[in-house]
Image (cartoon, rainbow over all chains, first blue to last red; front, side):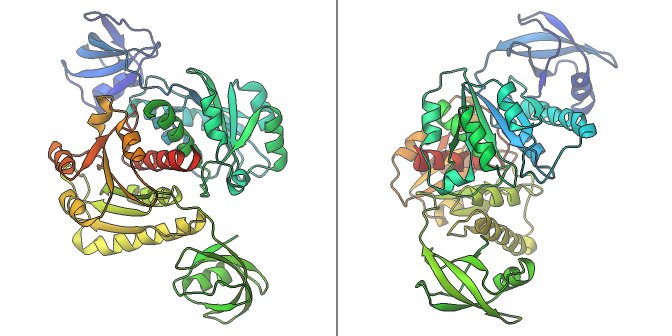
Length: 250
Length: 250
């Protein structure tokens, strides 16, 4: 069933009605060609899911009746903040799209010393808006109840000062080469439900020793993600899958 | 350091020499512009890695001296066979590229009942050759010692008859919706190092009830991969990451 995130509040009692407006109306009526009586899922601001039936519509809004209510548990037990160096091409988009499917709570992109790409200051807001849109669409498709946020930090130093976290790891290639293999498990084991895990990933060029030791000072420890070399956009997928496996399946 | 897979056998004793031929010569000399004295890694047929120094070259071959030898453990302890329904666009290529980075031993693509894409018979060999090339390049980049194979099966029935496996799972959306969350862990727990895990993934359209129950008869059990809906090309990445996490990090 098609899923939409509601920006306005909506009733969550069966039989009540609400008015759907904005882009969701356009998508449901024009793209999906919904007819009176058709149903869709709507996620309320407090993460409840209501199944709504189309009663009537105009060119700009739709009258919807709540027919069922559910509170699915589809969010990762830990809030994972994926922090990545700005990358070339469509890599940032892939990270946001796939990372949203895999349950990330938040994405932060940062400028770093070895980065081969930079976001021009005048284009940054447009880039972030585009990534936020990708997160929104991916959250709808993967039936999440939260849309991850996307933001930018000018450096790792600024990032660890600004973004709150309970536990922090950095996926560092050198760490993997030295065969480090227990830090991720240790970090996950000490976390409680609802806590924030900051996971830092370098850009294609990797992180400098200075960046990694600055992170260590902020309590963000180097962790290996297995013995194979992963590209910049693959490593966050590994981390999110590992968090899901360890927290949702084991 | 650049890595190449050797098709011919090579010495694995320091000081011995071998002749490099074929595409690797072209890449090393022309693309990477290697000079006499430069080093690269060469993976032998029996998964040893030798570091070789360029002694001399002609237009078609290069004389290389073994300067170091290593036997890195970079392969997943379980041999994971990723079996996917044929998909649209570049999804199969993404599955092979990322899946190789994440340690897959083998890829099998199959035709299925709800598939929205088919490989025309006259183009199949070309598709498989292209995917094999992608696997080769990704194996070099991710510093693996094995290049995964890529093959095709006309149906799931044929697949389970032809492809050997010790344990089989199928990632089934309905299973995830019903909250099934322990089968993957159970399946992994009963496996021994070196055994083959067959992991089946439907195409975008999913698998039919009949296909899933035929798989069950062949001992391939439905397993949930967490509560979020993943796209066809994301689910194999989750599985491979989970196998690595559970077998290499925990």
